[in-house]
Length: 419
Ligand SMILES: [Zn+2]
Ligand SMILES: [Zn+2]
Ligand SMILES: [Zn+2]
Ligand SMILES: [Zn+2]
Image (cartoon, rainbow, N blue to C red; front, side):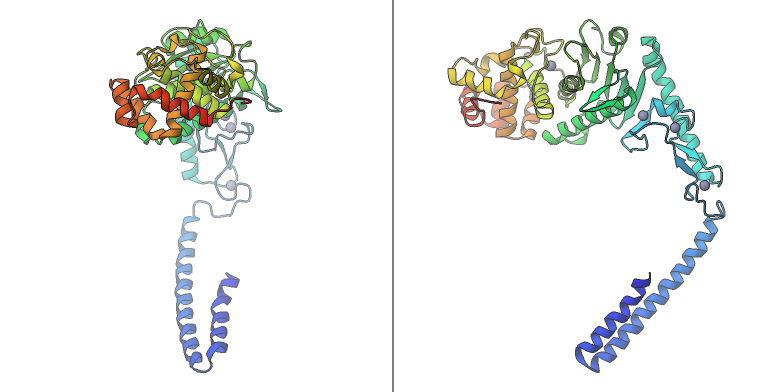
């Protein structure tokens, strides 16, 4: 305010010095104009303070304890604050003895009825949400130690054991928020990569990440329509469900777990892309698996996952998970299979080299055309168009030309050595 009130006078003096007496008149006029504006703003300020005084009836004294906000943030939930807008509900916060899911503690010194009413509503919503999750998941797993989080597009049940993420050891609650964040980030990246509209991924993602096989075996048949035998089970298409446990041999740490989640949730997303259909058993396994590998590579820098359905591929990883070089070499040697053959197989019929080709087909189409064009192509296939027709309609490419254009692109873009 102080510097603001000085500004008009400084400007007026500057204009007087600029061009003599004529400017005095202009300067004086400007002074009067500025002063009348200032007078008007003083009146407005006065009105404002009257209103403020009126509002302060609820809390007449400025409260230093809560900065007159009526509440303070509850600090009982660790470093990943539920007050972050992305987190809508968290079971740890909902069960908090201090705030019971309100995420804030009422200020005992001052009174603010609006704030208190809102906090009571938040507590009630958290209570109802947690009771629903306990009934739908914990009761089936017969495990009351499960954690839950709800974010904008995800419901996540979680019991992964504490582990290192980089050099930092995170507890189960912290890991849950990290994974919720990673899954939301993957969904955002999926939308961005394919330039999707908001309504093209209609389902909420339902993900279950367990530390114990027992929980997975009990919950998977109820939420993912079967399984429980392998380490992960998916329900894809209209529903977008992934239920898994951290199998210690193939997913020994955070990096492998993260890859598994990216790969599997990418399967859910491409299947949920409108119209919602899982293509993996309709002779389009290369789209189903190719997209999952493409995101796995894009986000975690390599591919090491095959899915429960992908039994055609033997266990273990293929070429260390870095597939550009083996694809380039296969093409140089002329031993790669043709698109016409690979593009007819189901996901569970693909061998590892065909998985690598599926990844490269997606990479090629997205890079040579666009993510949006690729999504349109996938939607056309889901509507029942033949691959040969959709290729012409979307990319102006005949199916018999595919291999020539693809191999030329690989020779230009994939290395012969390294990664
Ligand atoms: Zn207060
Ligand atoms: Zn939390
Ligand atoms: Zn709390
Ligand atoms: Zn897969």
